[in-house]
Image (cartoon, rainbow, N blue to C red; front, side, top):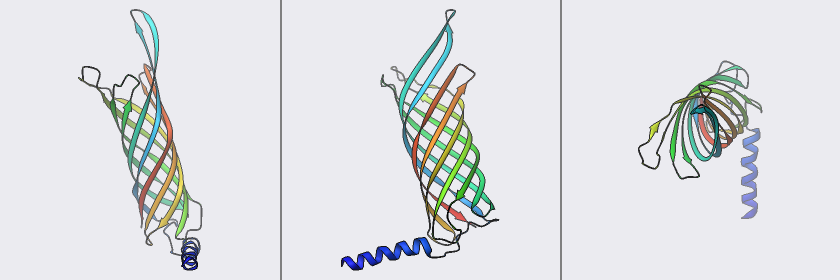
Length: 208
């Protein structure tokens, strides 16, 4: 039984790395799909202002759990190099030290570039993806009296990720990724929020 299992594993590995499937990574090919990701991170916010004529600076640290859905459309300008536009929706649950929860929402859009490391005709590949997005953030925070308030801001989002790609068919690819995201949110020089951290993702792409 063990020899049979060993042969099966070796066969799958052989097919994944050597079997040509004519994967659609050539110049002139379009790519349509998206990724869903999850991350936990620490966020630091600073607030500047004047109170009764006295300048002040406040700092707040909170923990967040974030999920993100990011559709994309891209085009291979050369073999293995895809560029395009990505949109995303994010939702984050915040946990303050003083137990005043809030939920943040964000809509973003911006360019991305993606490179596939291995040959174009393989079932298995490795991607490297970098992106920038301009976002609109808003969140509702519920203080002690539970009234809540809306606080909109704009953000700049930078991300890089890498991971394996497996072509399930000639045109459909399954992706797993590990990435790092940096987001800066500034509101009229009065406040700045920085969040950064690692995230894991899973996605599907259709090549045509």
